[in-house]
Each structure stands twice: as structure tokens, then as C-alpha cells.
Length: 282
Image 1: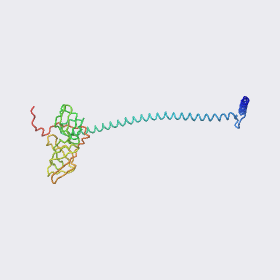
Image 2 (image 1 turned 180 degrees about the vertical axis):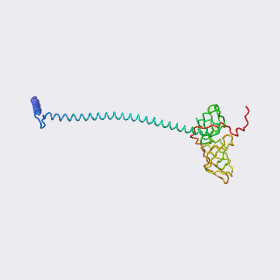
Image 3 (image 1 turned 120 degrees about the vertical axis):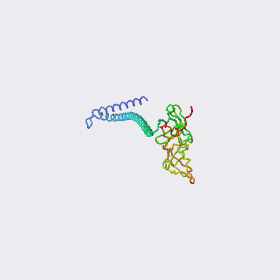
Image 4 (image 1 turned 60 degrees about the vertical axis):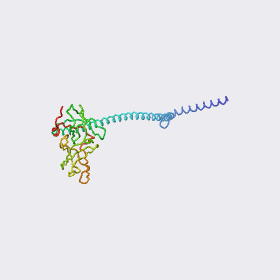
């Protein structure tokens, strides 16, 4: 066993001497380029190692730079999204301001174009029930508002004041089931009474059988009810049903879009019928 170990050691020693000898020869023998063979072999081995390490380092650096750049892009996108949201909000605010300005301009034109004493008011609330169509305005008795004053808008008749508080008032819309107004057909001068239907429709009733009413006719206030001044637009006839010579149903499309109403005028000038009423004893 000892002899075998001795032989193995001797073999290893011999192999080491041979390898060392080859290394020394390679270091002394030059290749075709004049560079020692040992240096050439060593360069080849280490250059491959260096290239592999460089590739790994470049890959890591590229991934890191990509990650940093991606974070920068994400932050920039987030900033751009916030700026876009702010710009869209400003556009909406500007659009609302333009719409509000147009509404007030139309109201001012109506106020300056009628020979009536009026007070401008803004709608600040509305009733939820479809059967009782009312809105609340920001003017009341402190502003000279009383019950049964007519309420108008640039497009036509809105309704009348039914409750006057000190700072606010309730307005019954013309489409309320309990609302009514004297009306006259602008074309034929046929007269009747417009009543609310609880929806965005009106009906013309108490029309004479010999009266001329047709689809497309415009209805205006007649002034006979003592509330609404004469000559203001109520709506347009959009359906006429007859039972023989008698009118069965005359449907009216209101001139006012009550769902988008914002500003109104309260007529403070008494109608001729109101002026003829006897004063109530105190």
C-alpha cells in the first residue's frame, strides 16, 4: 500500500514537472506573430472570461438603466395624467361659466325688453314628486315677492309663486296638475285654458267647437286669469284629437324645458285684473 502511494506521488510529481516544462517552453517559444505561445493561450482564456463578465455587467447595467428609465417614464406619465385631468376640469368650469353667462344674458334681454317691473331669481331646489311640480327660488318677501306673481323665463311662461317666505319662495310650475293659465292661439285667436298634466306636457281645454286649433299653433297667455301678463309664450300644439266636431284632447308642448331651468324673472307689476281687485281690509 505504501509502495502504491509512493508511485502515485511520483506520477503526480512527474506530471507537474512535465507541465511546468511545457509552460517554460511556451513562455520562451514565440508564435508567428512574435508573441510567446503561453501569453497567447493565457490571453485567449482570460479574454473569453473578460468578455463573458463584460456581457453580464452590460446586461445588468442595461436592465438597471431600463428600470430607472421606466420609473422616470411612469412618473412623467402620472404627471401628464394629472395635468390632463386639471385641464379637463378647467374646461368644464369654463364651459359651465359660458353657459351661465348665456343664460344670464338671455334673462337680461327679457328683463330689458318687457315693460314690466321684474326681479331676477335663481332656482335653488325642486320638488321630487312628478305630480306636484314646484321649484324653490332664492328671492322672497324681503325682495318684494308675494304669492300669485307670475314667473317667466326667456323662452316663455314658467309658473306662479304659491308660497313666499322671507328669503326664498316656492314656484308652482305650469306643468303641475293643479296649475292653469288662460291661453290664446296666436294664429286664430281661439281661446281656452291651459292645464298641467304632471309631466312635461300641457292640455288646452274649454275650447269652443267652432274654434280653429291645429298642430304647430303657438299658444300665448291671454291675461284673463289675472296672474300672467298677456302675450307670453306658453307652448306649441303638438297633437289634436277630435270627437266629431268637438275637441277631445289638445296636447301642448311647453316652450320651457323645466329640467334645465336655472334662472327666472318674477313679475312684480300687477296685471289689469289684479289692479281691479278690491283691497283687502287689514
